[in-house]
Image (cartoon, rainbow, N blue to C red):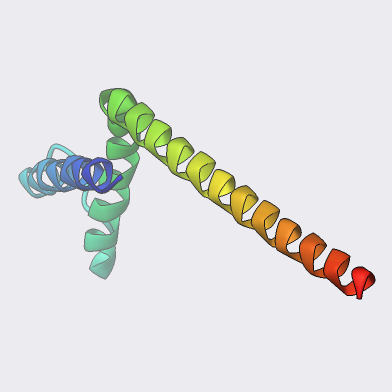
Amino acid sequence: MLRYTLMRLGIFVGCLVVVWGAVYSGIFPRGFGDSNFLWVLLLSLVLSAPISWVALRGERDRASVQIVHKVDRMKANLEASRSQEDGADDGARAQGRAS
């Protein structure tokens, strides 16, 4: 997941540099007054989202599989712990009835 996040951040920073260059060279319009930096950030975000969606599809799928495996393992551990508790509780109750 960290790898995917860093790759996505890299795409955003790349888009930020390209958009900043395009705005200051006059290819894209500048923002109004002091809002130019916000304009560059928003435009970079809008451009990087679809690029990340397409370019990082495989990495996103790998991260998803890892997360599913971790969740399944945690569920199995929780169920094993729960069944051990139930067994210990049933044993204690059976001994209590026998006395």
